Length: 447
Image (cartoon, helix red, strand yellow):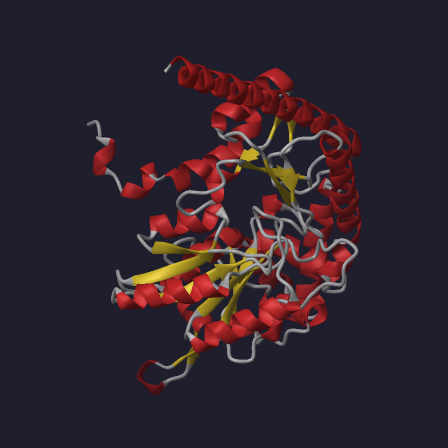
């Protein structure tokens, strides 16, 4: 029996779902090209021995610190486990160490990557068809895709120099309520956001929390890149500043330890009171998770737990070498752009993030998939069109560069190839404009 695509859920044809596949597979389409596209962690520090050692460290912890028998240790690792996870206590201590954040372990749910954390959080928070999720635009495409899967509408909030255009934010919220709809939460990535690389100042963070409280909105804070802060002093997370439980905090170990583990977590310490019996939002998230992935693999939780224990429960310590690599790469990319594009009188600009994986170039031509294909085939370098990250129209003349996965030689050569492509496109745009003007002038004369 064959199926018609129109008979399937509408999300399968949504551009957001195609975007995630595109981002994951673009490097495979052009294997000979230098990739400035993939937002992947640097691979030089990956060691198989790390996996075996971490499991050993964690099983010793279960036996020595948790006083488990060998039989219970084996069962903990090999059997189905609690839906909420087996390493919440370690993550709670890590958050206290690194974020100055005091979290009850029962308020934490371990997830199969941060993508599941997003999906579960949206499913629990958004109940009715009139509920609307907001997101700072441009936004992470995984957020857009998860909302599409759940039939949750998303409204875009504009950005400005501070990271949030509060006038637009207020207007969007008021407009939705005037339509009888209910803005429920806003998704934000305050530190080195994907895709823009932008960060919010401390003043903006406080203002955002105040605005959310005034408007009775939850903030869904996603923090995969916060530990890669370059030379700047690391700012507190929204959750660390949150005094009214306005923030649901999403964490991930994909960038800080390794993505193959697929381990993330949710901190959801909001109180729920069904029938007068107090509970936590985390309990409801765990309930939904039990029907999605049952539980996050105990073996991969053991790997993450062992890594945390080895580094005294501090990701700041665990990521020190990675942070140095990303800061080196950030400096190298910015220097190469200045050297290879800045010296030419071109209508090209880029932002200067203070950490993270990404930055954005603005160019005078359509930075679409056709341009990407040409760049890959003729110049041997790939990047990501920013249109994949915008809610609605936007990003047509922007491209995202990822600085995380390359070495210095690849960065130098990749930016050189990219600059050649951009100069070629700019020359063609200039020539086309000149010819168009000549035609218009000629038509005017002949008329």
